[in-house]
Image (tube, rainbow, N blue to C red; front, side, top):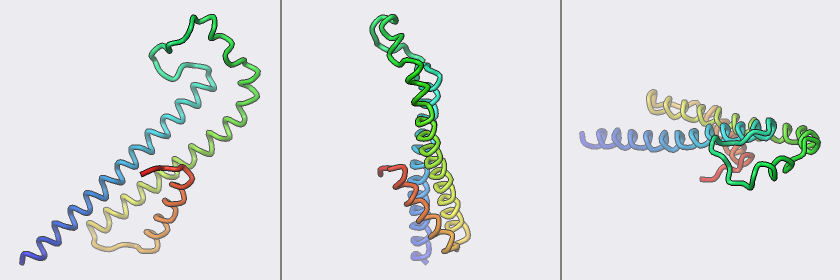
Length: 135
């Protein structure tokens, strides 16, 4: 009688630990995508990244730090890099959500679609290597 209860408790703990780990990765990936997007648009629009004023010399010294011509030349390469990185991070977010759904199915239904699970895990590892996510 005690063993099934202990097994159920262990499964519950494992589920919550795994779900918590995936939620942490998801939060990190969403924040990374947000930061990448904000940085890209602040560069393209030549606006400061944060609302706090930067500690710099007088404004007259900052006016030509990045001439408009240089910005225009770099914009296509920057756009290409931004598209690639943001696509990889967005793909990583989708895969984390898929892993969370698989984990929930295993916990609730006590069964797993092994093919989908393995495909999602392989894709997750590939995306993680593309994004260089640590942890």
